[in-house]
Length: 113
Image 1: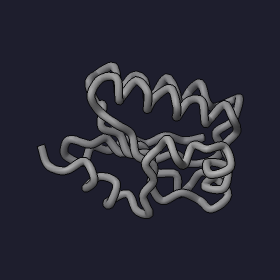
Image 2 (image 1 turned 180 degrees about the vertical axis):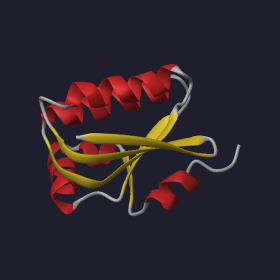
Image 3 (image 1 turned 120 degrees about the vertical axis):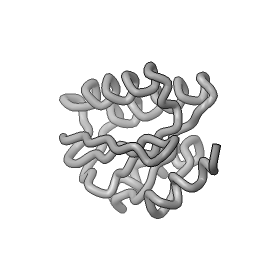
């Protein structure tokens, strides 16, 4: 798994590539939590290059969105691979997390500050 983060104004875009599973989910969680802890509570997670996510990956996303919302922010998911989207829908995560077709749409959904 590879994680890259870019700032888009007041929003951090987190690009993930590879698989998010029991071996990599903790790295993802600690990376996302570190950004939230620094006050970067508006996150967009680009899932276009994620081929697979396990329940451990879903837990990492859920923990992050809860903490971001607790701090007055939110997390959006964008450009989701169809296989990963199916996992999100079957697990009910598609109703908890805001999902967008493109990263730019997700960034714009936060509006201007």
